[in-house]
Structures are given as structure tokens and as C-alpha cells.
Length: 409
Image (cartoon, rainbow, N blue to C red; front, side, top):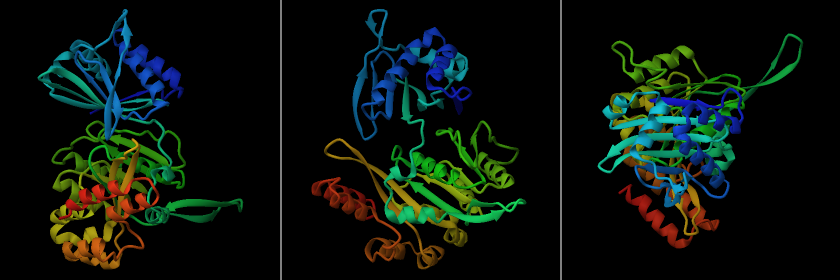
């Protein structure tokens, strides 16, 4: 995994683009021109996805509504379509790897950060039609917490994570200090492109502006950059800054690194394997506030995965789990993308059910009996709220609810 940064020394977007142009060289000038074109387009429409394929016009569009727009760059009085050599040379220039490395790899993931312009999460791959780049384009600025349109239940819960204390210095002056009240796990779940990474970045920014402690992130690759904040934010890329040690996996190395640094808050990017899930829950039981992501459709599926891994140590999950936030993005009939959430904040009764491994009771209490109605929200409840506020139509409500609930049957 590779991470590339431009413009973080001078922190001026225009100079960052010039720096990119200078370092990539004239042969990659088409890519710099394309980035400049995307910047202009971004002012008028949402762009989240970019596809660059061999001998084709570059396509851009928004996630969930990928009706592509074709970018027609004019070079030497003709419409430019990047060749396989153009794409290979660009990737070679960005990564600093020789061509034999590209030929030996079927897929390469890396990220490109351009100060003030954006974060480009890139995948280089080849198929029967040639080589290409699939790019997820993220805004450079981390969105404000309130822009996430979370349910009031979750916002109220989230604000309780940071507490304040008044300290008096040697001169008798009082200082309000923010700190994390207690540790535990906040898990964000959902499919690729549902907004999990952006949501966690926004949450971490919200916390970083309010506490004086240390926040560490372990990502693959590092995406949003925390340039200025009250807290110290240290970001590590798995495979680059955190590598396998003798007899230890990357995730085990990560855990020991995290514990040695004793942060107030930690973010661990997506957990996939059983070992990673187990280690995540273990870390969340050691006094740190931990954020992470997992691919799961809904609360019950996420709980089922974790319970199957944790088995005889279910009490660790019961004591550490603070919240599960499920993400889904819906494209409305008028072309807008709106977030749909499911928020699960277990109380003592539900935590006891988790400890007992009684998933059936949790399903019934959460979805049917609405035991957590004062602190949580199911997908159907969120969908009903969107309809009542005129965000979606009654027909959309029926389709969305049927789709969400089918995954629970």
C-alpha cells in the first residue's frame, strides 16, 4: 500500500497542483489537467467515482447514481483517450516502481492526497480489455459532524463520549479540558461506498477539536488527513508504518503498537478476519475508545459475526460494545443522495443478551418490541422519518423498507 501527499508543506491548493505537475513530469500532464477539470466540475455537481480505462474517454460520476459523464480532454488538437502506456506510466510515476513491478501485479491499491483539492483512493488493475484505474474521490475537508444527518438519538449519545473538567494552573487560572469519559467500541458497518470512512473521519475530527489527548488511526490506506486539531492525531498506514513482526501478524503488531502509545481514541480500519475481530474487541476492553468498520448489512448480521468469533468470551463484546451504526446511501427519485441509518445502542438488558449469545431475543427486542426506541433507530424507523419529512416518497419508503427487512429474514 502506498500513500502520496502533495502540498502539505506550503498548504496552498494551487501550488499543490503545480507540485504534482512538476513531480509527475510533462508526460503525465494529461492527468494534472484532468484533476483541474474535476475541480471545476465539483463546484456544480457531486463527483465521487472516476474510471480511467485504456483507450476510452475518462468517466466521472457519483456513487449510487453512476450515470457517467465523459471527460473530453483536448491534447494536440485531438480528444485524448489514455493508452495503456499512459496509464502504466502514470501509475509508475506515482508509485515510484519500475514497470516490471506493474507487470507482476494484478491489482495495486494506493491513495493520493492533494492539499485542499481532495483525496483520491486509487486501484490499478488489468483485465482482458487492458489496464485501468478505479478512483474514489473524497473531499479534502472533513465534513462537520452535523452534516452527517445522524438521528438525534445517536448525536446525543456521541456527545456523551467527551467530558469536560476544569483544571487550575500554577497561576490560579482555570482551564476547561476535554477528555474521553470511558473506553469501548463504536462500530460502523455497511457496504463499500456507504459513507463509513467519511462518517468516522467526521467523528474523529469532532473529538479531536474537543480533547487534549492523543488519537491514533491505523488505515489501509490513510485517507482523510487531520491537518490541524486540538488533539494530537497520529496516522499510520498498515503495511508501511505498521509491518508484520516476527511471529506476529500485522494486526497483532498494530495492537501492541496501539497499547504502547496509550491513546485516548483509536481508529482501526476495516476488520475482516476472525482474528482481527477478536483483537478489535480485546483492544476495546482495555480502556480506549475505539472506532472501526466492518462489512455487514445490518446490526443483527454484525452481532452474529462478532458472537461467532468471540464465542466463550462473549462478555468482552457485551462490556465493550457502545454502538453499531449501519450505513446505506439512497438515491432519491429527484437525484439526491441521502443517508439511511440504523443505530443500535445496547442498554444493560440487551448487553446481558449479548453475553448470553441470545441473538433471537436481541432481534425481537430491537425490531419488534422496540425496547431500545428511546436510544436507537432501526432502518424502517429511519426510512419512515425520511418519508414524514418529505425526503422520499411513500413508494420509495415501501421499496426501501422491503429491501432492508428482507436481509433480516
